[in-house]
Image (cartoon, rainbow, N blue to C red; front, side, top):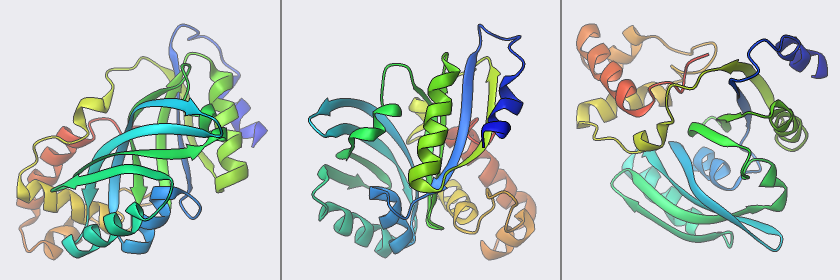
Length: 231
């Protein structure tokens, strides 16, 4: 892992740009991710704020939930049973809540780390976070933490200018057709690497023409995840 990180870090020609990393890790032992896998739902979530309390990091979260209505209801019901969940509510597909995270997650929730876009939590039992810092050593520490505790894998780390932060895109106004289009794409692994399906297959599942489905999906992507899937 050290060699892989160094491959990205040996050139320091952009020292005034932010370092950004994307990390994929197992949801098996995470609070929300394990429930998402259990109930077959997918979601994008963003930490709105946080503070430290004894052995916990208290995090206020918000995001968008995708899945069958019955699955979303069971997911919410099951998650609310957890002692680490302080508050949680769902309005249509938008959720907001307060949860307790282990104190070691201070590595992720602190003044040096910026959450570039919502975290993606998959029903396939993995999560992807997109975070940045002007101090690259902070990101390296997070990569190592995720490797040790959650079978983490570094997807990318690079220095670049940040165009925008996606906090305002947590719950955009999606039409029902756009919502169904992106929900189907997420569910069937269109955004996995490598992709598990194609637009043609998704259009057939949605009972739409290729061009119509593509339009709905691209509009949803533009609203919801404008740069989440950038390299």
